[in-house]
Image (tube, rainbow, N blue to C red; front, side):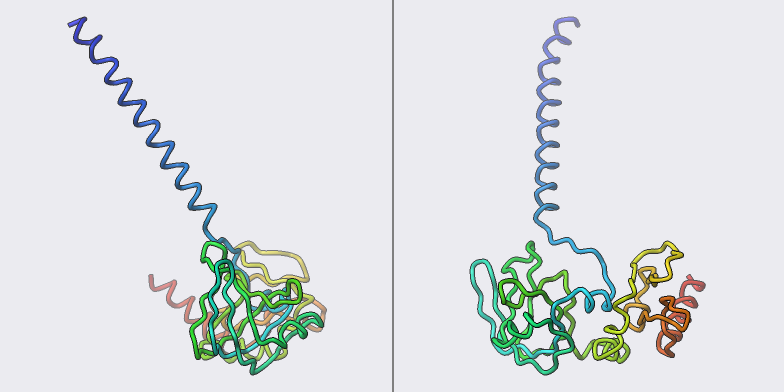
Amino acid sequence: MHWNSLKQQPVQSFGYSMLTRWLVLVLVAASYRVADACSCLPAHPQTHYCNSDFVIVGRVQKTFRGNDLHAYKVKIRNVFKATPKAAVALRSNRLLTPAYDSMCGVNLLPRETYVITGQVQHLEAHISFCGYVRKWREVTPRQRKGFRLLYKQGCTCKVHMTSRRTKSPNTCVANYDGCYERHGICLHDHERRCRWTRAPALTRCLQASHFNSTMT
């Protein structure tokens, strides 16, 4: 019995060693996948508008695929916002984006019209998955009104995507609620406090969301 137990010890040790190495390899591979993945913090459309160099509505005409960057030739239909440098960059009607999803590249469909926010780098217009890119036909009427005028008026306010309440007079809390993303616009009231402006669409959405939560 003593000899058998001694013979089994190297086998068990070898098994544990192989298991440890396998777990290490799995963790390393997982860490590489996390590092390679595109990660963006959720943000309200108003935040995207205020933090961007340009906001346009454009129809995709052509796609040019490179090794590191893809370029989209677009027909710009509306310019809702453009810094002086963005105005120069947009003259080419070309938008650049990383070639890989892991680098937050954006895939645009040909002949589709989008609302797009972006940044200017070296006098070139860049877009990414971390910006705001939506098919124009899917943008709500309230969002369209925001992009055309009201988001600009609310850029002195901050929209926080959090479930925590805040006492800051310059902050609106979206609470990860799709209703505020689709219908909410944060503006100063007559007391100079930032609040969600009243809108029938927002009220209906919140009521429906509350009703659904009580039914589940």
